[in-house]
Length: 253
Figure 1 (cartoon, rainbow, N blue to C red):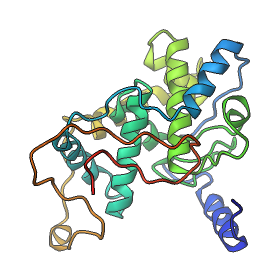
Figure 2 (figure 1 turned 120 degrees about the horizontal axis):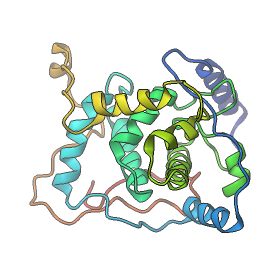
Figure 3 (figure 1 turned 180 degrees about the horizontal axis):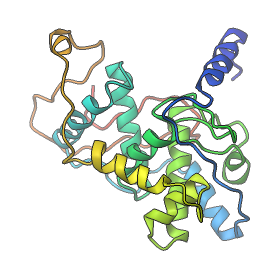
């Protein structure tokens, strides 16, 4: 589906403003030839619509996780409904790839500082700063790397791939993701530090400004479930990861 001209202009301007944004430590994954088996596996991972693991065991667990993470993201993503969708999508895609959701949040903080239209000097795009060549190698040329779920699907799939290559060595997998393997860039330390300081479940909660406590909840904001907890999973993503169906977990309004 083609975008209207004024929307295209807006996207281009937003992307231009995001280039070399302050606080971003984006690099670039490097193209490496893949065996046919690995390429096929990554293609299935990007396209597969089925959930491989349960993301949350109950609505109560989902709401508790959101309650811990949402305030930490509020300074960077003010809209509560957008924040909720982002966090649920990030959690689902991380768990789906066998990654810690909080680690993925730390990586996004370092790569794009949660800027949807961030573009690195090397051309990496979106929340997870995915290089465009990946759409040709394991996806489809029409996949939009600025789209929330597409960026997270590709990013988590690629990081999982690098973690497998490095036999579980997250330090080296992160450096490979950033294109800084073998260099003394400090990238892996930055991601792991962001994870531990800001996103780990036991990380200190941010102080809530006094005025924020008096403000009414944003339209569409999450409310704690009032019914007893029941089994819940994040809804499987659409078969084409560039679609825009909102992410929810079962039992959400």
